[in-house]
Length: 135
Image (tube, rainbow, N blue to C red; front, side, top):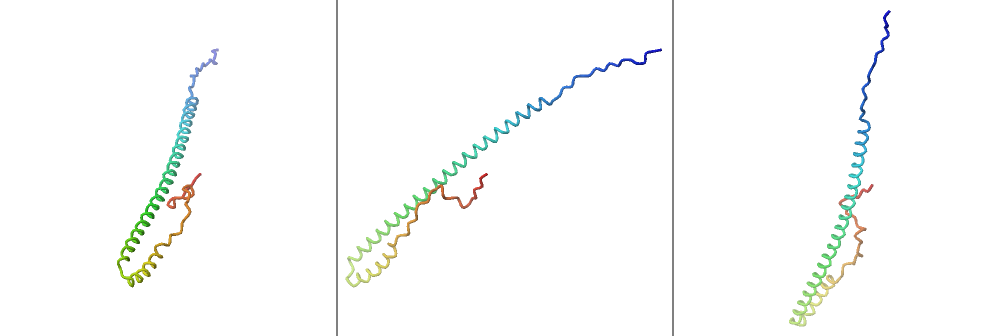
């Protein structure tokens, strides 16, 4: 009888798996994404700092401009009062008393100083146009 049981020799090819390569690529991409997020956070923080600096500079500049306008207004007012005084010297005594009453009323209106407001700290004021949402 013939030997029916032949040995079948099966040669298996070695399988190359991509799991280690994919793991390395995943770790590299995850590291790059983390680096990107950290750098974006730093950029946002530096921009926030610059915006706050510019806002405080803007409020200081506005305050200086307001003071300059007040000084100019006060100087113009003094100049007008000096001119009125010079004109009164040339008027008769009756006209002078009548003009004095009118100018006193005007002077009382103009001489009342506006109530002084305490200076506000630039860090305390917020921009009304924007709502700050921080995480």
